[in-house]
Every structure is written in C-alpha cells, then in structure tokens.
Amino acid sequence: MRCKDQTATKKHDLKVNLYDLDETGRLHYFYHSPSSELPVRDVLNECHQGNKTEPYLEKRAENYCKRCMQPNIRGFLKSREKYLFLVTRCTTRGPRQCGRLYIVGYLVKQDYEVRPGGFYAVLGDIKLYSFDDAYPLSQTPNFRHCRRVLTERLTAHVLDHYVGARDTFRKCLKAIRKLNKRLHEGKAGRPVRTCR
Image (cartoon, rainbow, N blue to C red; front, side):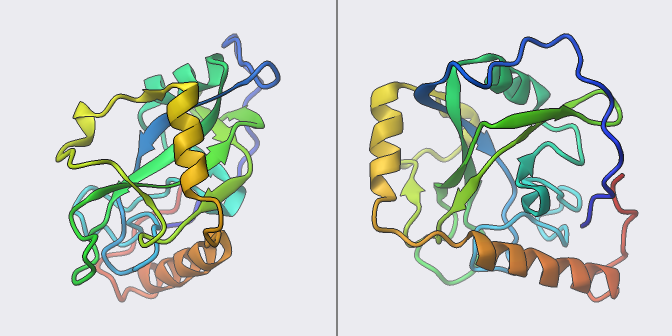
C-alpha cells in the first residue's frame, strides 16, 4: 500500500531528542507479509490486520502513513535511544523461522515529522536483514511480553549480531513495490484507498 506524501503539519510541542543519543534502542513490531521471504510489511492484508503501510521504507520512516503504536514512537522520539529495532514474526510457510519473532533490522533516529492528523513519524537510515541473519527473540511467543527498551549492553549485542550480515534494504524496497503493484492490480483482494 502506498502513502501519498502530503505536507506535514508544523512541529508540535513534543520535546524530541535527535542529537544527545545513547547507544540504546527500542523494539517496534510490524506485521510480516506471508507473500515474501524478506522481512517486509503485510501490504496485501494476508494476516487479516489491514493493509499495512509501516514501516514505510519508501521514505525510510516508521509511522509515516498511519498512526500506530504512537506511545512507543513518541517515547522513542523523546528518549536518548538511537535505534528503533524492527520486530516481526516470520509468516512465510516453509522456512525454519516460520512463527518465530525476530529483530529484522533497525532505523537510526535522525529526524521526525508531525504527519497530517497530528501523529508523529520517525525518519532515518534503515538497515534490514533476511530472516537467516535476523536476531531471534528467544522463545517469546507473544511480542506483548517482550521488554521494549534495550540497554546499552543488549543494543550492542544485537548490533554485533549483524556484523558481516548483508543489508537487504534495497531488496525489501523492491519487494514492497511488487506487493503494491499486486494490490493495485486487484490480484490480492479488494484494493484499498492509499494513505495521504
């Protein structure tokens, strides 16, 4: 699903911290597309949670099109945390990772926008990794039971896990474009209105 880029409203009164950052992070969940072996959002609504627009890779952003988990995003923007770790459950049938939770990459906090509707989006460089290279979240069956804020030590451990792994951001962006095309050609159920 695409997001129509409209002019963001002016910055609000949230005290956003973009410069005095620690090497810490926060977890943020998104629904994975069963149609892709790559860690991309569920554009086609195959998880029956709606056509997903986040993370919005096209703008290197999270919460760009839709208000989702705003307390987590606002908390991240106000904090000294540098990394928004992207978490999903692999839903692709077949791979040994199916059904398990993974940290599949991260967004480095560099900027923000107040979007139409008054909600906040965080923007920055994004790194994404295949499920083979992703960081497993132990045997946690439910993301709600995961601790959201990561210490400096745990953040370093997660980042060290990715050393030598191949960033799949461009492949993921290409996969999103293909899924969007399928959605708008009507090959994946009823097309929905694009976000503004």
